[in-house]
Amino acid sequence: MDPLKLPFDADAMLAGLRPWIECESPTWDAAAVDRMMDLAAYDLAQMAEIERIPGRMGFGGCVRARFPHPNKGEPGILIVGHMDTVHPIGTLAVLPFKREGDICYGPGIMDMKGGNYASVEAIRQLIAAGMQTPLPVTVLFTPDEEVGTPSTRELIEAEAARNKYVLVPEPARDDGGAVIGRYAIARFNLRTHGLPSHAGARLSEGKSAIAAMARKIIEIEAMTGDDCTFSVGVIHAGQWVNCVSSVCEAEALSMAKTQGDLDDGVARLMALAGEENGVSFEITRGVTRPVWEPDQPGTMAMFEIAKDLARDLGFELTGTSSGGGSDGNFTGFMGIPTLDSLGVRGKGLHTLTEHIEVASLAERGRLIAGMLMRLS
Image (spheres, rainbow, N blue to C red):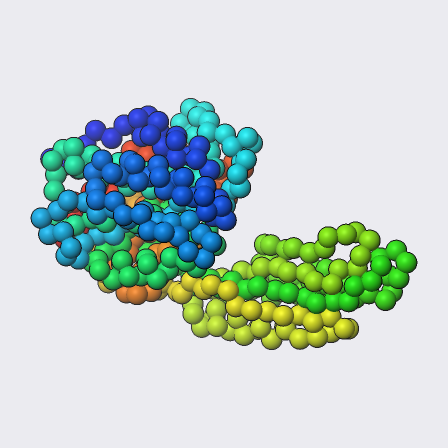
């Protein structure tokens, strides 16, 4: 049977996806992420051998599912996706699960629970039809991708090393295309140390850590160019408005198309550390996603298969290197053939308008099912 003709039903898939969306799972809430993993484990347990891997470093745990196969244990296909989202608990109040025609809204529905669910449905449809994939299939759902995968990178790399191919159901690109390479991303922790004083009675005696950080943020973001970008997305400081702040902390992100450009950008940023006007500025490196170079032969061979399948589904699949890192950075960097952004179509990821095209659930389910049957 042709896997592209399996009876995928977008409406039924959306109904199955709804509990996943209504189980909010922000990265920093380990208990919430674990509740999401419970739902995924339940859905997968009907088809696979399930392992619950405890979390560490304050993050939630993982779910690993291995499906029955005559060659179980041999190198096969790894599907890797994250279940954490950027949306805090309570987002459902302002971004509820809501369908409007062919659009459905909800926190994490595009990034990336929709793609994860399409992957599970692809495997379910193949099993129901009695179709055996040429290679064993493993699914690994992780809890910390949105903060750079600090606790599970080693696990992902170890699992990828046991397999021949990696599929990543991150959201499709704007044109429905796939990703065949990703830029390098580095994170930084910033801190200024000032001198406290009473902001009303003795303002001139203080040295504001907040003011110093504000000036540094302007300087850092002004370093953005065509080869390397810089942005500051988190800042924490102060407890009392009547005190000149003594400490301010922030987090910065840098992205570059090549490792050389990133290394240069890192060096320029680190050179800003020091002391000025009695306020010190400290920079420490955070997690880094390495460059996944495009046009690797194994990845391009996978992409050609995906393009053929997409044509049979009625659309042209493009492939490009992309920013916005994923766990595909790690597996692609390792040289393991990896195809990313096989997930759902939509818009507004990481915002309060996040939504998907409902029809794309079935489209991507068929595409992933086809990949599972064609890769050998």
